[in-house]
Image (cartoon, rainbow, N blue to C red; front, side, top):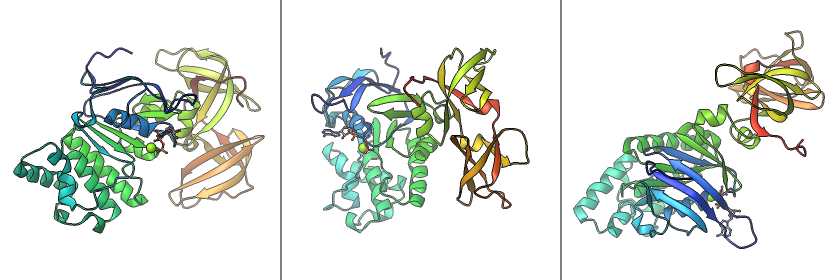
Length: 370
Ligand SMILES: Nc1ncnc2c1ncn2[C@@H]1O[C@H](COP(=O)(O)OP(=O)(O)OP(=O)(O)O)[C@@H](O)[C@H]1O
Ligand SMILES: [Mg+2]
C-alpha cells in the first residue's frame, strides 16, 4: 500500500514472526492513523496487539514491513529517537523514585534543564489531577493513582505518538470508566495521536475515533465505532463488537436501491424467506446479523413472527435478555426493563425483526461452516 505522507502514522505490511515454522504474530498489517486521532487496537488475547505496539515504539524489530511517522520511514530509528510516550500493559513505575521523579524521568533522559523539568512535570501532574501527590513514594499509591502517574510520565515528553497498552486493565469497573473518560479528555486536550490497546469492546467503542479490530495478527476491519458496530464486514467482527444473532442464510434475490444498501430476500433454513438489507452485489451463502436489542420478543398472543419458547432469562436491572428457542435455533433478544416485565422461562414467545435490522454481511460463508 502506497503512503502519500499525509498520515500521522502508517504501518505498511508490518510483520513479526517470533520463530521459524510458527504463524506470524503480526501478519502484513496495513494501517493509517490520522493526526489527533485515538485509534484502538481491539481483539482477543494473543491476536498481536502488544507485538504491534512494541514495534511502533521501537522496542522490537519487525520481521518485515515499514513504520512511517509524518511520511518519514522510522522503521530503523532507535527507540529513544522516536519521541513516543508509552504506558505498558503492566504499568510499572520506578519503585525507588517518588511521583515527581517518575514523571521527570523522560525529561532527564532528554537532558532538559531542571527548571523546565519542574514546570513540565507540574503541568503533566495537573493534567491527571495528582499534583498534590508529587512527593509521594509510588508504593504508597492506589492502583488508579499509579495508572495516572504512568500516563503523566508518558505525556510529559509531549510525545509525537502516545502508545497505551491496556492502561486500565488493573482497575475495578467503576474506576475504569472514570479513567477512560479522563484519558479521552486528556488526549483530546493535548491532541496527542494515540494508539490504545484493549480487548474491551465497550472501552474501544466509547473512546476511539477509529477501531482496528484484530484477529490472528491481521486487521479484520478498520473503521469508526459506528461503522464497526453497525456495518461489520465479517462474522468475527460482528461477534466481537457487541452481541449478535448470526444465521447462515442463502440469498434469494436482490433489489438495488438508489442509496448505498440493497434490499435482499434471504432464505433462513427452517424459517422461510425473510427481507434484509446489505451492501449491493451479494450472492450465495452469507451470514445474517440481528443485534439482540433489535430483535422483538413478545408474548405468544402478540403480532406475527416466529413462534418459540423462552429458554432462559437474564436480568441485570437496566436490561433483560432472554434466549428464545425456535426449532433448532436459539435467538438472543434484549430490551430495557419496564418494571412490569411478565415473561418467564417456558413461556411461548413470538420473535420478529424489522427488515432494516437484519444485515447481510459481505463475508462469504464457506461450505464447511455451520
Ligand atoms: N517474545 C515472544 N516470543 C514468542 N512468541 C511471542 C512472544 N511474545 C508474544 N508471542 C506470541 O505472539 C502472539 C501475539 O502476542 P501479543 O502479546 O502481541 O498478543 P496480545 O494481542 O497483546 O494479547 P493479550 O491481549 O493477551 O495481551 C501470541 O501468540 C504470543 O504467544
Ligand atoms: Mg498484550
